Structure formats: C-alpha cells, structure tokens
Amino acid sequence: MWVFLRTLSLHLQICWQIVVGRGFMWLSQLLGWGIPIIGLVIALTVSGVSFRFGQTCHVNHRNSLAAFWVPLLVFAGVTVIMQFATFGYCIKVYLASLASNSTTTERSKLPSYTASVRTMSPRQAYHRIRRVIQLQWRGIAIVLIIICDVIFFAVVFVFQDNVVQSAKTSDKARPWVECLALEKVDKKNRCLQYAEDLVVPLRTVVAVLVLLAMNGIWLLCLLGRWSMVTGWVEIFGIGMPTGVRAASASVEASR
Image (cartoon, rainbow, N blue to C red):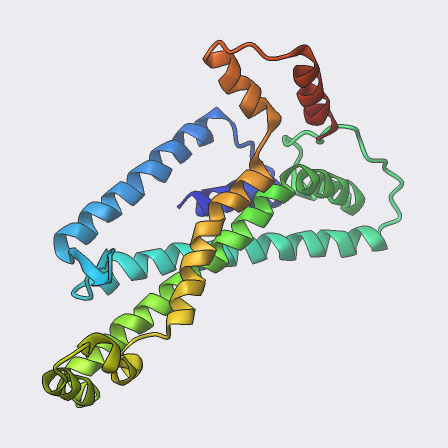
C-alpha cells in the first residue's frame, strides 16, 4: 500500500503536474495504515492463520484468494502499470525534447506546477521531469525493488497453496503417508524425500524470505538521512560533538 501511494505521488507530479502537499500526506497516512489494518481483519476473520511452515504462522488457504492474495496482487498490478505509465511518459517527453528547437534553459528549482502540460514546450517539460526524477530516484528504486518482492512472494505462496490442496485430492501424498506409517525411527528425516513433491522447493521459500528481510536494508540505504540521526539525538537531548554535527550537515547539503 505504501509503495502504491509512493508511485501515485510520483505519477501525479510527473504526468499531471498536481501538487502533492499536506492533504495528500494525511490521505496517505490514512490509507497507508487503514487499508492494511482492514485487510488484516478481513483475512483473520474469513480465512484465519495457522503454523503452516514450521514455526512460521501464515494465512490459511480457505478464502485466502479473495481475502488476501487477490487484493495484494491488484494493488501490485496497479502499481506496476502506473509506474510503467510514468516511465513511458518520461520517454515520450524526452524524445519530444530532442526534436524540439526550443532554447529554454533548466532552472535551479522545479518549475511551477500551475502551468498546463499543453502550454509547456517539450524541452521545458523534459527539464521539469528530469529535475523531479533527480529528487525522487531513491523512491523510484524502492518502489521497483519492493513491488518485485511482493509479486514474487505472492506467486510463490499462492502456488504453494495450490500444491498443498492438490495433494489432498490426489494420490501424490500416498508414498509420504505410507512411509510415515511404516517407519518406526526418525520418521521425519527418512520420509522427507517423499514430501518434496508436496511443497515448494526450500530454496525458493528461502529466497522469498531473504528478499523480504532485505527490504529494511534497502530502505535504510536509499531513504536514510543523517538528519534522522540528528533529529532523534535532539529529541532525546543527547549531546552531539560539533565535528559530527558539522559532518552530518555537510552530507545533507551535498544530497
């Protein structure tokens, strides 16, 4: 949901020249927290969760498509379409600027958003979009990384649900069940080979979990600011050496 809102913000700025100010910020806070909470309540109510992967609690298969996976993939799909529409518009403006004979120069700040797209020359539009992308490239990178993770995550676990359900209605699980019934010692390890066809490969699940766990690292690397550190230091009233404060200010200024 947050990735969708980030993409929507960028799309409105670049393609429609709409100011995303304080009103959009409060709306984003409402939707960014509210819709996931509503989705969680619905998923817990109509589907429920259980310990389906060892010590990992996960949403049940029953009603999970309508309550969890379809809404997740809808938001992901709309985000992808909106992101590529924004990229397509940028490419269109860039190509138009190459063919334009306008001699307008790039301003040091973003041009006013009050001008209509139709009244701007292709080169002016190109300069404005380039400036927006220079300011927002970290957000664009986060959107692309997380949306890929979400789609990969959803596809893998939906496929896992389907594989498990098919095992209940076919004879695929018979060798594994017979092994559990016949083995007297170390049933888990000796019968594990018969269960490989009943689940998604372990390396695929591990890849999903590693990618999801790395999202926090990407957020810190791309969106982290020294001003966040100094802000928390000032909130808690911790003294900061003058040299460290000057260095952090220099880093922020360079960005």
